[in-house]
Each structure stands twice: as C-alpha cells, then as structure tokens.
Image (cartoon, rainbow, N blue to C red):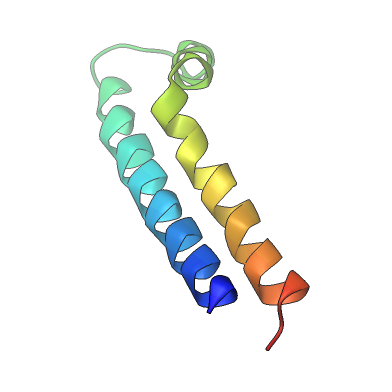
Length: 66
C-alpha cells in the first residue's frame, strides 16, 4: 500500500513539474535566451517537482517491488 501511495505521489509531482516547465517554455519566444531560461528555471521551486517525482517513483518501484 505504501508503494502505491509513493508511486502516485511521485507521479503527481512529476506531472505538475512537467506542466510548469512546459508553461515556462513560453518565455523563450518572448526573447529569453536558453541560458537565461535555465537560470530562471533553477530559481523556481516548483520546477523541482519533476525530478523529485521521478525519484519517488523510482524508489517506489525498486525499494518496494511488491
């Protein structure tokens, strides 16, 4: 039961982080260079949801395989 909860939590965080990253990619046509874009992404805390979600899903799959 814990592994299912951990996986779903990770999946939800990964989806939220991915949507935020796709949304922020609209800044690129507005004149931001790639370096400025990545600098901006690394300063936003909600962009860390994607890697945290992936890590939680990996933990759920390999730590609790049943």
